[in-house]
Length: 298
Length: 312
Image (cartoon, rainbow over all chains, first blue to last red):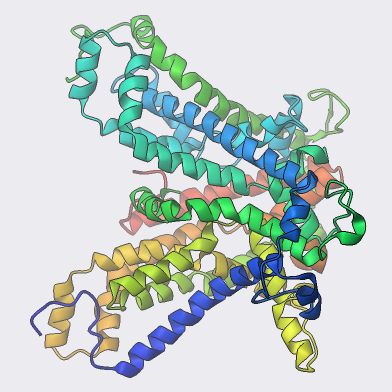
């Protein structure tokens, strides 16, 4: 053999290769099949869903009634809007706070750097606990406010450290020449550092966005007004806990013409999945890298 | 120094603060959020020593000393049950969840085709990015009373199985969900460690006539042993924290005795049942023990010569 093989020599064993292939195929199937079933159930015809006991593995056609019913102005549509607002607003707040903090921490010898850095690092070591968190949110009058779903988790110490390391890697000469030209710290940050950091900003932004999109327990704890429920909470109520969606919940569609509950439930599930699926290729590429640079710090 | 700001003489405290005022202003919003929502709550732990009532203004509640800690010191059965479930779940997950990504990483690493490897990775990483609500909703579609498997059993005239509402099977259910969600993602660190192994070692082992299993045992395993030990220690440092959201979402199906863990105990008794002081006391002790465990785990990890959590 002239080339050095990367791993263990696989040898001539076709049998072992077949076994590996089968095992991996099964692993992939276990992950993929539920997704196919969820999508299929959401678009199958009423009759097909009823006949197959509520869960369809492959649809008999394309029937969008379930989607029409949830986008008819009811709870799901409203919750989707709330989730989008939280995810975009939250991500902007998080990015603004984290990048500015990280930049201040990345300038060598700046005033107060050491204590501020310690505050950021120590926040990684403990979580304050549910009851005290609740009390703080309550004392600030944030119960039933969407800000309660954003502010408590807005700054992740881990992300600040990631951004800081990146900012520290920007050559000093670039920043110094701007300073000689008379630019102040904020100006340098805004028109030089941020444009140079687009890639890392995208990654950290997605970190935050996925976190906001997936968060469910904060909403359960802080939001009792159902009009402000994010999608995950609607998903929990109507899908996980199986509360029946009435025609009133669905924006007053004619009650007799509602698609089967199972299809509506799966349509809600698909709607909450789609944003993740859209950003997934990007996530996979960059998060894997981020996880390796951050190693086990997370 | 590359710092172009005047620094001939050491500047006074005040002069440095003035020079960096813009930087300080920039740090302020993020720092304030951290202080308010991460450090200020530490003060909230004071209610662990109070008879707290939500309608009494904070700070006016009566002090009751260590009374609220009685459930811990006297071993209240409900508390002990939550502790037992927490440790049991950790134990089961260390045994079944922890090795899964190692096995999968070894399997993926032995694939010769990079393309197949990448496709498989793309599929298996996906569940990591889903919320627990979605994962559990998906599991219900497969394992629920009218889910895929029970539909199949019914169609073929067999009895159905209650996967989701069976208290005895709850830990197995939790474990299978964690495996489904995070095994693929968990392979990343191990795959990276595997690529660090010098290919020459395999070559040398082959020249010495080592079989594939012996190569695995004498080259591959020693190559990732450090990482395995490190991650195991860190996981044990996290012993008291087990899937809170995951359990809260499914608790009503199996009842609290089988599913109560420390975090759900705090939520159920505090926020829902109004025993604020007692749950804050349990939360506080749990938090303190957890910090000690994490620091201890880091210390041990350092002894094994690997960088820990708080060290870069």
